[in-house]
Amino acid sequence: MRRHFGDPDEIPVKPFERGLFLRLMGYVKPFRKSLFIAGVFMLVSSLTDLAGPLVLRYAIDSYIIPRNILGLWQIIFVYCLILVINWVSTYYNTYLATLTGQKAMFALRQKLFEHLQVLSFRFFDRRKAGKIMSRFTNDISALNQFLTSGILDVVSDLIVLCGTILLMLSMNWKLALVTFTTLPFVALTAAGMRSKVQAAYRDTRNTIADVNSSLQENISGVRVVQAFSREKVNMAGFEQINRRNFQANVKAATLLALFMPMVDILSVLGSILVIWYGARLVVAHQITVGILAAFLGYVTRFYSPVRDLSQVWGSLQAAMAASERVFEILDTPPEILESLDAVELTEVRGEVEFREVTFSYDGESPVLDRVSLHARPGEKIALVGPTGAGKTSIINLLARFYDADAGSITLDGTEISRLSFKSLRAAVGVVLQDTFIFAGTVRENIVFGCPAAGVEAVERVARLTGAHEFISRLPKGYETQVMERGVKLSAGQRQLLACARALLADPRILILDEATSSVDVSSEQAVQRALEVLMEGRTCFTVAHRLSTVRNADRILVIAEGKIVEEGPHRELMARKELYFRLYLNQLKELD
Image (cartoon, rainbow, N blue to C red; front, side, top):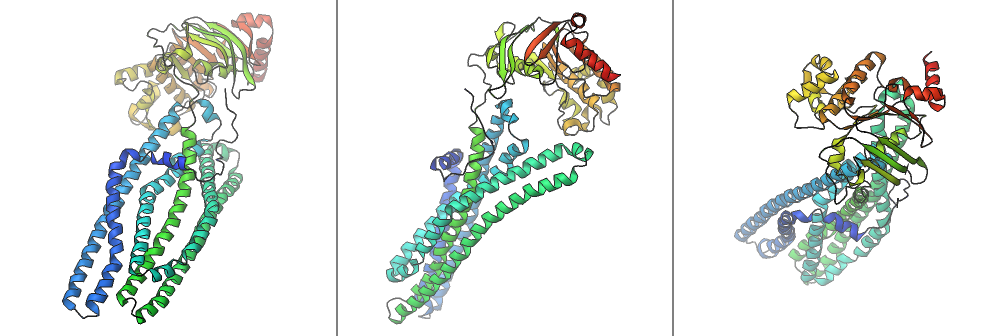
């Protein structure tokens, strides 16, 4: 049962989920030992921070007022020792917390990448590459910021806050209660802004994904953009997307910026109340000057965690929004699954059969309707027909990029859904119209499917396909670095590399999807010769719009509206004077 999806990149705004937070913490669990040690250092750092005002209290009451200089130097030494301990513990706390967060993000990023490798083509059909990239960059970055500092910061701030409250109550509960009178106003402000901050940070994650998507699309299509003079139009479009991201970030920052001054104002008000009421208690001899000085020190420590917790709250909101987007991908199950009792094919003959196969991309509108075909081992099959007839869908199903809705597809009598992925991918080779060349050397691109292939094997397939001639003219031959997508190579050279890559993999079944349509006339003959070498002795399925390139096929299947309407060799189909005949004559007229 297929699910119906709307916009897959729009994550609905919803309140904080405890389950989502615990799931995120699951990636920290394997590194709990280092996190525990970081927590110990954090505890020491928090306790030494709380000790400062206490030292000040005793310094004033026991040494400064009695004018005990020797004792004052001793208390100064103790205070310096506390500062050193605080500095060391803070350093190791920060280092270990950052290390733990980085390890957790490494594991999450790795799992996300591995999951993407097994997701079906249908997943990528409905998502822009830039938005997927945003999950790896911006969303992971938001999670990293929270995990490397946010978690322990929360614990540290809570320890300092609770410790401050207890110490203030123990010194003088009346003065402590006066200090706490502003706390309800802080709580009410934080509660009122919670949902707004949450929504704002979700918006920042969505808009930065749009920025990445637009950027990636324009970089990939820069030649088309300039060819059609779309620079100004695209600039205006990107400005709108970029402005939405700008406005979303400004809104999120503004909400936090509104909260910070309010906390600072309440902190100042708390200090004023402490001085006013504390001075009265000192005059009445109910507290000492040292206690009043310690209280003023603790007032700062009381409001500082409150302010820090609000910042962590913003970081948490960003992390929750980001985790929803990351887990949305991780929770997407792969549609194409390997059978639990998968069969390994050892000797592939190359016999392919489709039996009453029906298929649709959206689960509603079929692009193939009860298609049946049988290809004998070594037979050359051509698939022709109008655009959108279903030709590419047939080869997509054969390579098992998608699964059929009904019917069966067998390879040497075995359902391809029962074959292991390794067996099927080894048996079926694909040469596409737009060959993808990876950034790296020429040799690395040829051995892409056979990483263990030696130098002699690489050169042999290059010579057989005719690629060796142009490779030998490159600055460093087979070790020449080529840019992503092979932008420094011609279309014909890229196709020759693709042929060499496929020949080295030595598949028994070969799929050629418009393999010569993107090359110029001067390169077409070279590519065609390479394809002839590649097709020799293999079962071949060739998708072609140029009908002149499939005249020598053993059998031509004419596809129209998802069905095979004609079948036979070129001469026989021409004699029938039906759809194939009309398509062929129309192409001849276009050439004239």
